[in-house]
Amino acid sequence: MSKRHLARSIVMQVLYQWDFRGKPSAALPAIILQQMKEFGTGLNDEVSYIDETINGVVDNVDEIDAVIKQYASHWPIDQMDIVDRNILRIGIYEMKFNDAVPAKVAINEAIEMAKSYGGQSSSKFVNGILGGIYNDIKNN
Image (tube, rainbow, N blue to C red):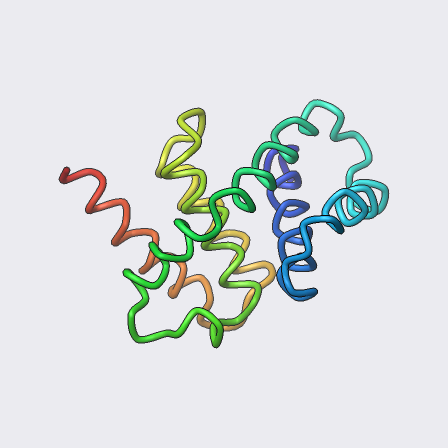
């Protein structure tokens, strides 16, 4: 597993806990520290990516969730699987706010995380949503 893929997994786990606990921003530093201690051995080069991505998702969560609602109109966001919801948040953040990550890489990484952490149909769901967003971005 690449360091960046592992870093994305840590981001997803932090966002999962943050979301599960009701989105308490004050708890983020402790959640990040705990995840880095448990899973971040050897990821010193990825700390800034992890911090920037978590903070970017949290700072833009309303806009990101609006995009999810637009592209997953038949799935109320609060009824989505919490893993799928946070994988989508990471993918959308990387596609719309992080120019350093190519959109196709963001989609592929999100699909791989969905296969690893989500349910049986999570990867198809994530692919469908992010693919729709990508097509609209590409056509505009």
